[in-house]
Structure formats: C-alpha cells, structure tokens
Image (cartoon, rainbow, N blue to C red; front, side, top):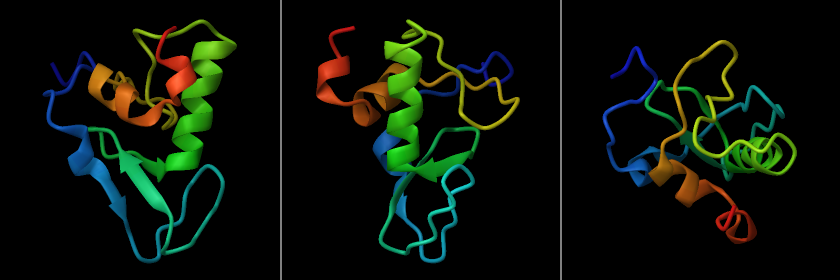
Length: 94
C-alpha cells in the first residue's frame, strides 16, 4: 500500500501540528505559530501551502482523486480524509 502511495488510512488530524522552529520548504515561513500538516510520507508543509497546492490541483488541473504529495518526486496520494481536512469548503463539491 505504501509503495502505491495509498498509505494506511490513519486519522489525518494526528498529522496537524504547530512545530516550534518549523521552516516550510515551499514558502519559507518560519513562525512557531504556523499550523503544519504532513502526509504519511512525512512531507510537512504549512497549511496555507497545502491549501494553495490542493486548490491549484482541483481548480486548474481538474484533479481530485489522485493528487500526489507536494513533496518533489513523492508518490504518496493525498487521501480523501486529508483532502476533506485541508481543502476549502467551496472546493469540496468538485
């Protein structure tokens, strides 16, 4: 399951954290106040970057079911529970 990018289906809210000294690799935010999220592959980015990335995939690329992790060449698929947690309400109907 992991090699296919499907993960184990654990509760995604467990991967939401505020981490002191966290430095987002996408936007370079380094505030200890920023909320972050990691997929099961352990790629962690700030919530704003995850939301922007997912919004682009859904709105501009028409993706919804097989969105891959924002981390480089990672094959981890963003699971449905994580999508529901991260995407804005207006995108949930797509």
